[in-house]
Structures are given as structure tokens and as C-alpha cells.
Amino acid sequence: MVTLVDPRRRVPRTDVVLADSRLVAASELLGPGLVKRAVSDAQELARSGVISPASVADTAVASLPPGASTLTPVINATGVLVHTNLGRAPLSAAARAAVRTAAGCTDVEFDLGTGKRSRRGAGALEALARAVPAAGAVHVVNNNAAALALAATALAAGREIIVSRGELIEIGDGFRLPDLLQSTGARIREVGTTNRTALADYQRAIGADTAFILKVHPSNYLIEGFTASVGVRELAGLGVLVVGDIGSGLLRPSPVLPDEPDADSWLRAGAGLVTASGDKLLGGPQAGLLLGQAETITRLARHPLARALRVDKLTLAALEATLTGPAPPVAQALTAAPSSVRQRAEAQAARLAAAGVDCLAVPAAAAVGGGGGPGVTLPSAALSLPERLAPGLRSGAAVRRGDAAAVVGRLEGGRLLLDLRSVAPDDDERLVAAVLAAATGDDSPSPEDRASSRHEA
Image (tube, rainbow, N blue to C red; front, side, top):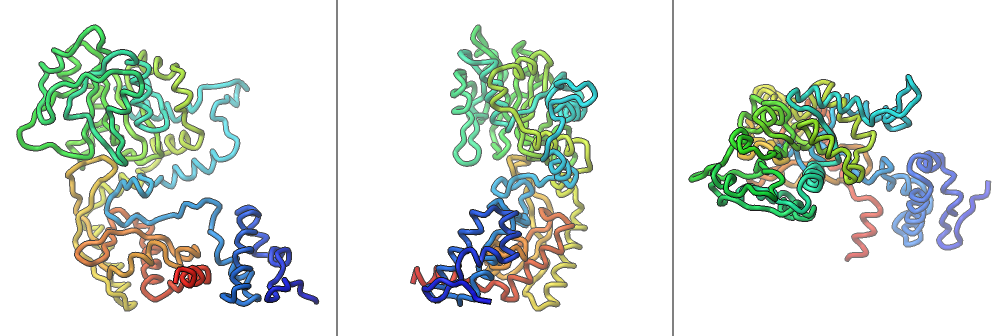
């Protein structure tokens, strides 16, 4: 058989390389454009002498990602249970299965029995209503900021929103609550001071232009010392609509987080509307939850902006499964017994030490994260490893090939800590495998990395 090659350094022609069965399969999964670029890059490496012409197909295959998305699955070993940079709440197995079911055509807005159009996401909305008995009605948008924006637009455009100065919060990436509210056309009426606000401050501010009082849970910081604030029940007695932003998504009281506000309690205390996140303490997909008086919810759901903020079928499926299925990973991590976390750490540390890895099980303190439980520390245990392993665990060769999971921990005292409270027990085996891959030198640079290093040098 005659091999067709490029006359320059006898590099195999593109059509010949693309006929490799591995690349044919990859084209079906990833798309022909991505695979063709990988082949072209490998051919250039062969022409420049970095690899041999016979290695073009192997190099192209090795450079391809394991999936069509650039997102890489990560084991969150930071000890921050709801880590915004790592996608916040990991979905439960039930929610993931629901997303797969909803990925095709589904009856999201269709009644199979009657053959007519039906209420969009009825199952998810009914599940949310059951989860918060004090809510007269519920609605879902794409995140909590959207929920607040919809409330301010529909209820307060051209009017005033009364809010305590101590609750004009800024969250991640420079996002400020006052900027969001003012963008809707509402005016902010600040009352009180940063550390102390009294009921009389709100009372004096109420006027003909008052749309509602906004009560915000300062979920990512604490103000301590000489402080005072006003609760929902007292505010509800002023005769003005009270809108509460609990932020973190706790629907009912939690014994683990007794100081964290929940939607049901605030509604029972008199709030007419409560907004919350779906992907924090609730443990579901990104979503903005609106719960409250039926008349208010109907007004919001029928506002033109509600269509722009509508969630898709995947979110509705994941939300319903989170509400009706078993406890999601965030809830399991919150309630895990410290002794069970310690036992896991000791068992995995012993395995790694027996394999020659410098690893110890050490006490640790985990955090809730995601704007929930500020100041709360959760007793935990971690695997203590050499700091030098951190880059390989995050993005080493085994991770890039898809042979090992990406693992993100935290650095303390010159050591890398992998906190097991934020790691699902089912992921312990994958975590150990990833550490072994990084510690045993299975992190050799790829031909592409070597070529890049030569170029930079």
C-alpha cells in the first residue's frame, strides 16, 4: 500500500490522517472542525521536527478534549461547599438524570393527555410551592438578581424602594445591589446607618411614592458590635409591601445554620414576596425563586420582562428533581458528621502514604460559601499534601487527557489541603487516583507543551 504524504518532511496528508478510526469517532462526538484543527496542529509539529510523521494521528488524538464543551469537571476539595468559581451547587444524581431526560423534546409546555398547551414547567412550580407552604404562589426566573430586577421593575419603576444602608450589599465581581435596583427605574430611599437602623427610620421614610420596603440578608459578611436592625415581622406591621431577599436559597429552617433566614419563615413573618437562589443552599440549578402573595406573583409573572428572564426546560427539570428527590450534595455535605469526614480522610491518607505519597490526614475548617452562613465554620478533615502537587492536580497531563479528574484544593502553611467535607464520598476513589497520577510523575508534558516551551524560550 502506498502512503500518501506531504512532500515537506513526508508528513501524512490530512485526508489520510482523518481516516483514522479514532479521529472518525472523535469527529462524530466533537465535530469535524475541531478534529481537523487538531490534525493540522499535529502536522505542523511533525514538519518542525517536534514529533515524527508517524505520530501525527496519535498526537492529534491525544490533544482532543474528552467532550464537546470546554468545561472541565472538577472535584471541589477547597472546603467551600458552595464555590461560585466552581459552579456553585453540584446537582444530585436525580437532578442530573432529569436533565438528561429533558435534553430532548419534552412536554415542558404541552399536555399529552389533551393535546393542548399547558402551564410551562408545572411540575417544578408545584414542587416549589409544596416546599414552601407559606407561599401563596411561586415563579422561577434565571437567577436571584433577575428575581430582584423583575420585582423592582414590575412593582417600583418610577417609585421608591426603602432599604437600610447596612443592607446595600456588594457581592462577587463588583456587582452592587443599588446599581441593579436603579437600573430598573426605581429610586432608592436609604434609611438608618451602616451599623444601626431602627423601625422609626423606615416609618419616617414611607410616603406616597413608596413601592415597597426591601429587606436584604447580608449573606456574605457580618456586622458586629454596636448594631441594630429591624426584622421582617416588625416591617410588615408598617402596612407597606415587604420584599425580602434571603439570597442563599434556604427554603425552610436549618438546624445546622440557625441564623440563616429561610423563605418559609420570612413569609410567615409577613413578607409579601421573598426572592432566593436555586444553586446555593437549595443545592439545585442556577435559578431565581420568587415566592409570595398570589396577587404579587401573578403581577410579576405577567410582566413583559418575565419572558426575557424565563428559564429553560433543563433548569425546570433539575429544579423539580432537586425539590422532590433525595438530599442534594450540598445538603449532604452540610449535615455530614465530623467523625465520618475524619474517617474518610484517615482512610485515604493511609492509602496514599502506603503508595509512597507524602500525605497526612489533618483537621480542617470548611465554610458554606456562596453567600450563605457568613462566619460559620464547619469542622472537617483534609488530606495534607506537598504544595507542588497543586498545578498537576488542577491541569496536569492526566487531567488534560481525561485520565484523571481535575482537583482544586487550598494552600495553607506551605501545604496543599484537600478538604473532604466538600468532596462527595463517591468521589473519594477518583480523588485518590488523581493524587497518585500527579504524585507519581504521570504529568509529562505533551508534544504541544514542549513545542510551546521551545517557542517561548
